[in-house]
Length: 396
Image (cartoon, rainbow, N blue to C red; front, side, top):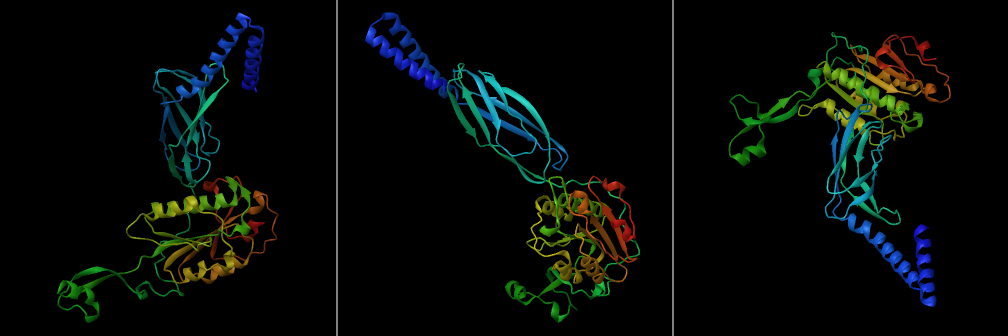
């Protein structure tokens, strides 16, 4: 609006000077015209050679942890930039590191700090610079596309000691048979040794190498605990950190880390849109695999926990214990969970009370029995203070 008024005033002034031939009017008109042209050129010249460097100290990329980012803005050329507005275009929640600075030949640096408020891939950048001349009439916008990406893991909290009896042995489940009954997996090949069974010879490789090669076998890995995570979209309520989904993901991450730190193997099954199954693996750290998955997990499943295909998979997998994490008030998942247990295995239910997150209070009728360890989690609860109970009344 100011630019338009100034341009209109210049037109009127030039017309007045032309009609009246008054010398001072010409002087003022030319002076204002030069000023207008200079104000238009200044930000365009000043914006040339402006660069910004963003250095991110990601810290521990976990929800609730802090990070630090250093901004350094430089410019080349002799035209100063007295007013530069730096705006961060990333969508990092509750993080606004931009500011207004003045640039000359010296670089300007500052440090901004924030806290991770959401899990998943977080992108820092791009950055927008707006350069203006001293009168504020004209601006030049520069967009710098430097980006830094960080995978933010869910919040891992201290938990009470979960029930993992030392007397349990892998593969004692009635429904899955003894551990030794699982067919071995081919682990590799070696040179044939006298006495090797005929069935161990790897004929294609033997033909290729022109000598007999024997297969080597390994027993499949067993999990000390399988986490069953309910990601049915219809049962989750709440928003942001105070939602049943975030509590469920945080519980799953906390359980996985606790079991892994005790030197035991953990697997994860979810009824999400892909039917995720994460089994223990010899070549990778399973805790990282699970955390990578949980960082981006969403409640996009369409099957209820009671009808999920996850249970069919679980029946065929060797394990010692099963931990179910769900906000579902449908009692059928309890029956399904008890059906997959075997002799000497443990059942753990981490029930998230959806009513404490704003959902309607359900009419619960769970019959947990005496063989299920129950933990009830409500909004605002500290996980370290959760206590174990077998009393279904605690759900009400």
